[in-house]
Amino acid sequence: MAERAPAWRIGGVDIADPHFHATEAHHEVWRQARARHPIAWTTSQDYGGFWSITTYELGGQALRRSEELVSARGMRLGGNAASVEAAADRMLVVSDGPAHRRLRSALAQLTSNETLTRYLPDVERRLTTRLAQLIAEDRPIDIVGEFARTFPQWLLFGLMDVPEQDWDRLGRLTDSAFDDEATGAAALASRREANAELFMYVDELVRRRRSAPGDDVVTALAAPAPDGTVLSDDEAVLNCIGLLNGGLETVPHAASGTVLALARYPGEWRKLQRDNGLADRVVEEVLRWTSPAMHVMRTATHDLSLGAAQVRKGDRVVVWLPACNRDSTVFEDGDRFTIGRPPRPHLALGGGPHYCVGAKLARAELVYFLNALLDLVDSVELTGVPRWKRSNFLHGLDSLEVRLVPKRAG
Ligand code: HEM
Image (cartoon, rainbow, N blue to C red; front, side, top):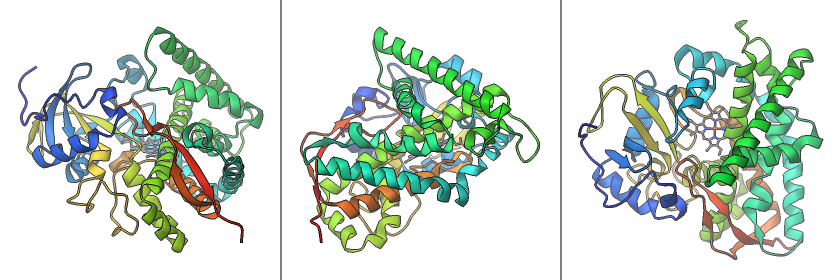
């Protein structure tokens, strides 16, 4: 591979190594990277060479320049080449241009207010009930395993009109199929099996909706789009899986990260308790500070300049979203969780044409979660050491043991 400059100069760090992200050391590395080389050629033992972007301005630019920095050749490091090729221009997140617009229009329902008002009250009811139960048990709880991992399923399975008796099974399947940390023959085999079963389950769902349309998001994907085009069975299945993946792999990290933030910054929690009208604004700080998507990747269609880099045709460009979102030239003291920052868009939900299609739903879920915490919890105490995910793709907690101290009645 020919030399590329500027090169990543932060000694000994393989930024793509999943193990490197199992602690919070990346924040210090990103601080140095932002100051020294906002875009730099990085080489990784397992992932080869690619450009790394760590600043807000360049990250936003890379996401918006979608005609020259494309997604159809994969949007993450280490993606399986054959699967990417099979899904390219047929699955939203790995499609570009007209193919992307066609698929995205089939999901217009996700951004409608009607969808919010239809599904969210049920999510709110379940969420409050479950949280109240956990608090009543008066013991340390793992907020990830006992709560955050499940609650986004209620919305997604509801949206897809999955029969409630299947929710546990589908929850286990998605947990296992999307397990980013599986290593070793046995774990990889069980992930493959779960994936195959998940595809079969969703395939059956699509077939049922084709013969008996309902009023749900699977029907929206299976039925003709407003412009008359119809998705193939495979496209409908792939995009249902994409929704499950997008919604179930991110919201849990934002929710458990919220709890960590409130435990670490009790003064900010008190601020919120004094004025819970702030919940809508806090959700943006939650998304910025937790940044559950660790990176997104693009591939250059031709030679181009990006910041100080001369990117060549075929080069991969990786935007490290938590690094961009903590850029202190944009978010003062960016590593700190601070309620009441001046409003400023962050990149946690991406940018440009691939901006998260579930953004409205994710925000609403998190506002409900914050409101439930405000109703039920006086303070949050950490009772264990937070365990971070060993992943270069997702940024979040594998477990977080806390005691949620209940509000006193009255
Ligand atoms: C806190 C929660 C969430 C975060 C942090 C998040 C983050 C992101 C990011 C960064 C992207 C851009 C990917 C790229 O540029 O390649 C994205 C796209 C996407 N998200 Fe989300 N997401 C969240 C919630 C959701 C939910 C609830 C759903 C489903 C209901 C969802 C479904 C998707 C899909 C299907 C895409 C692809 C959109 C496209 O390519 O046009 N996400 N998300």
